[in-house]
Image (cartoon, rainbow, N blue to C red; front, top):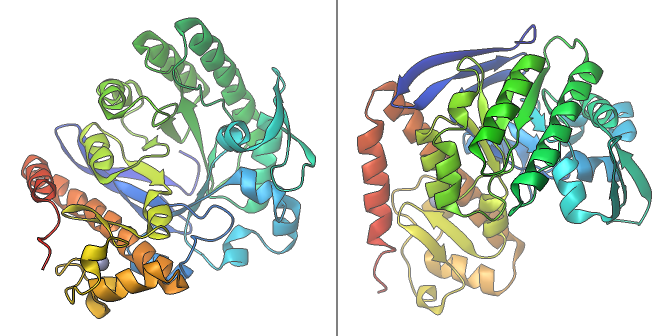
Length: 376
Ligand SMILES: [Zn+2]
């Protein structure tokens, strides 16, 4: 791995793994869930609060930050960590995925992608080289190679062409990244749901050599069953001694199923985005605080949860502030959701370390199957 960064596996249980990624900005306990700080903030949360939920690392979005406030500006102001007051590790994506999902007037060539900003219509170009430059300007600790997230569904022919371009871009990303002690570069496996293409992609990435490897092109509409089918083999194609990152996942049961299949890192907007729409994720599944059944309920959202939303407020209060569109609704529910997601991660880390992952997983599913507590 890059000088100054290391990955140590502490234990495995079946295919599930637990370990630590050590970086100059602190340790990342794996399996790790990364809250998404899209535009230099995890929406509705102060950085100290994000840390208090148990997060070791955040994800920042290259696409959003390059458009606003701009990577060069962030660099002049001292880098993303100081700018957003988060001194722990940050992983940035390459911008490729969001260019394809958010921008307009896109044109992709072998060189890269030209597009118009969704913010002000301005013209931009993203190439592997520019993506590496932007992520360097931001000061990202873990940099992602620039790739194309192959849309789903894709025919074998479309997928293989897209995957091979991504592999050429992976080499260009590696070359442009250069030698940066204390910073890691991750490659991204593509190949859609085609096993032979996943294999070809993994071999190409290993040939280039990366500090970590992501499984890309999943959680794009294929559904959990098909995602798990790919995860039954794809992580095993990647080097065992490097972290494996599943991008954009997911719901609690997606996360548990991915860790079971050998994934070490994940990110998703779900806990924060749901929190801003009155949705809570709990040990007993999903709870919609907007629902009238909570209006007179003095009980906490989850009596066993230690987060401020559950310790200090009733379901009735959470229902009220959600209905009244008060800002504290998004703040409290985001906190709870992030806290719960990190609790899942901590639970899995402990279970894997002690060789009882299977039992932990059975309990996780059994509790969810009960559903929310009965209305009063
Ligand atoms: Zn809570």
